[in-house]
Amino acid sequence: MTAVYPLGLNIVLARVDGALYALAGACAHMGCPLYMGTLDGFSLVCPCHDWRFDIRTGRFRASHELGLRTYPVKAENGKILVNLA
Image (cartoon, rainbow, N blue to C red):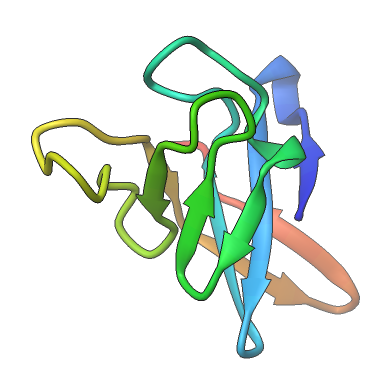
């Protein structure tokens, strides 16, 4: 995982089984930096309070009403492109 800041927006990038994922980079709970967390399969684990988010959907595992914004992402010509629209 790594943090990126396109146009100043905090986004965390992750790759699992060759697929790329882009999510909001701050935890929905207290804004902790998610790039400092860990990946457990498709779960992104917040470093502050162990909240778990599905990187494919952004949904909080314990309560699907909460979640993180996800962004379309792809690798092209050696670059990672995140669609912010």
